[in-house]
Image (cartoon, rainbow over all chains, first blue to last red; front, side, top):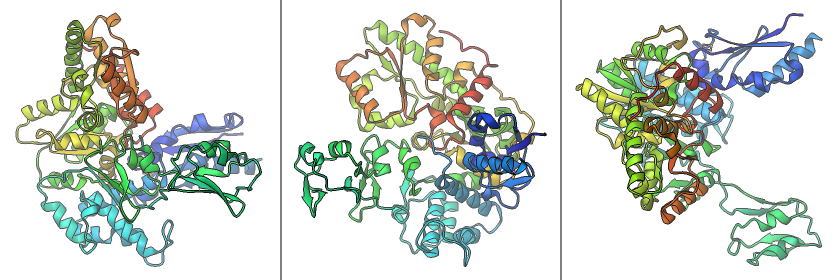
Length: 85
Length: 484
Ligand code: FES
């Protein structure tokens, strides 16, 4: 099974609006998820032009999360993993 | 204390982004006037306050602070468009960099110890017997506190077997290390500027986001628009606060209109060498310890609360001072803008004629966002003068002491003692050192107002851990500081 890809936007807007902190996600990920999820940073996801104030954005699988926080991301990951099973 | 990524912080950043966009968009006064309406348009949800009108009124106040004006002086009649005009004609920023939004302040209950409904009216009544001040009586079978007698000692809180008694916190007052926040007759927070050391801890602590910095963002944008030559001085803590490397950041600044950028780390090299020399001289002459002097919050503390320790404080100037001096010398007609992590440095900027403006990282971030500058796609531009590894490490706790130690040579003589954040306890510790003329923990006392050092400043954008990691990676490539 391919891993669930989590892409944290590190474009200027997302980084400044709080995306910087999301880079701690790998440490906050439950051990049981480690084999199932791949986390990476990525350049601007192209969302900030229209709605900069809803940054930071994170892409989880094919779903876009706005005003992302570690908690919101973990919740979405759990949802996706449960759904995949 | 660093702002966490809470909604209050997000909201403050959003105001700055919208303000910068309003300025850049053309009709600035009109666009600024509309910010509260754009953020809460007709019929929109009201996430935080009682009604849309109050939300907009508070957003208006936030915009006023974002334009650099004191909310305390607002007459409520002046339109945002008029403030916008004023912000354009202002010759220099206003004096006090902090302001409290009365309308946003919750007016947290001042009565601190509170018996909740969980009180069972038990037979033990330990709360009553433990209270040394006779402040607890039993009313209708439950404990009641006489506010006039209560001294907030928390003994009752600790003994209640039901945990029914709590201490109600007033976050801004609690975090202020010098008791500069009091309540006005309406019960709203106000800052006593005679006591305030501009540490910015209240900014980060208030859950209602009622304390703001008076931003100089519009002043800087205005100078850039006029085509002025503007030089940016980048605090050492900036590595790790934006995506990309400091070299890419320099390019981003040039795209946004700055003519050049210097690393304040080169000033830090001078500070460290001078401080190393001073340390050696002072110890030779019999003094038992010396404290560093570069932190702006600490400087305010010295002036307002701790004059007795001044004879033990290094008289060396700050890295920013030396960097600004150099930038001024090399660019006599340019405007000098310091970009740093905290509000205290705004105070230092206001007191130094070589520094025209100070922006914090949130404000610079807003400027980049409004200008749609992608730092990650910028090429590297090298800095004209290379600074040392130790100078680049000035921005985290322990970095200054390590730099002074390396510059002093003879490391066996220097024993660092790190004051990692000013609070009531560490201020007591400093007072004790001054009174006893000695410090048992060390002889070079590095004082950082913010926990973690400058990377923990109130406007830092990254976590302490990540920020420090990135600084270390960056400084690792730099040459060693020259010894004495
Ligand atoms: S910076 Fe994240 S979407 Fe553009």
